[in-house]
Length: 112
Image (cartoon, rainbow, N blue to C red; front, side, top):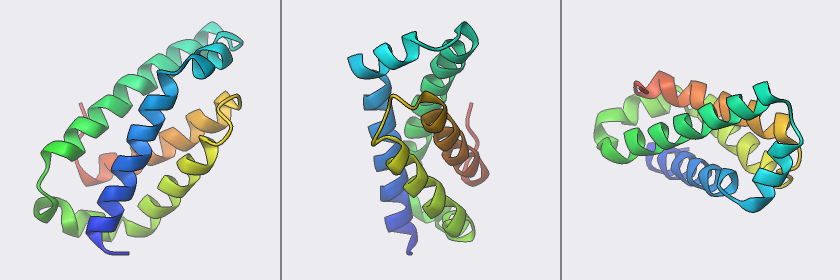
């Protein structure tokens, strides 16, 4: 996969995750979880926003080689998150998939 497709897919998945995590359905699902899980979800939402901003502010030519180097992991993590978002009531699955994508993105560019 070329860097521009990887970039677009990752940004799209992160944006979808943000929209999901701001939805009433997510709030209903997360309300059923422990306070630790709710706190982790809040922190994850902040990290998602940071990743979106960081990716959006980077010039693709500046990160293309890093994206290509992490392409397989990035593609797998993006696909995993997209699949996890199909059923947001499985909070742990969404959180694990989101964490995997954020870890790969943090290899490409520093997150706050």
